Image 1 (tube, one colour):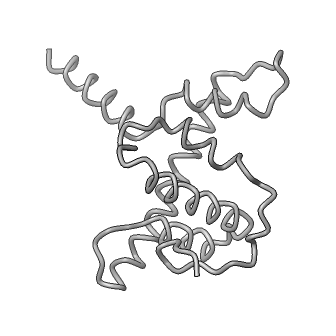
Image 2 (spheres, one colour):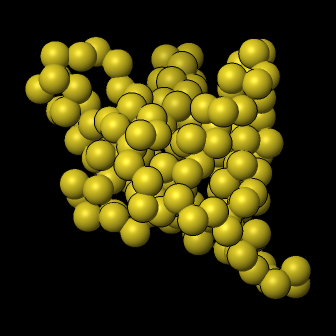
Image 3 (cartoon, helix red, strand yellow):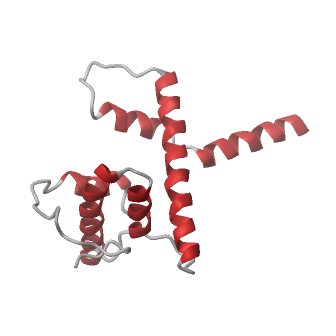
Length: 143
C-alpha cells in the first residue's frame, strides 16, 4: 500500500511541475500543417523545456524582487528577467501583450475565470502597432 501511495505522490508532483501535454500539443500544432503529427517524445521534451524556462525566468525575477525588497513578482519583472537573460527579441511583443492584457482586465472586471486561450488572442491582435519604441516601467506600464 505504501508503494501505491508513493507512486500517486510522485505522479501528483509531476502534474504540478509540468503543463499538461494536451496544452503543449495544442500550442505546437498551431504552427504545423493540418496533417502533421507530433510524437509523444517531442511533446514531453517541449513540456520539460517549457517548465525549465518558466523556472529560469521566474528565478531571475525573484532575485530582482528580493533585491528591490518586494515579495510579489509582476509581469514587468518577468520582462526584465527575460531581457537580462538574453531573450531580448521576445520582450517587445510581450510588452504589447502585457499592456493589452491589462487593458482587457480594466474593461472586464471579472477576468478571474478567463481562459488562457482567450487571453492569448490578445497577443495575436493588432500586431501592426508601431509601439515598439514606447517605454515601459518594471511593472510593464506605458510611459
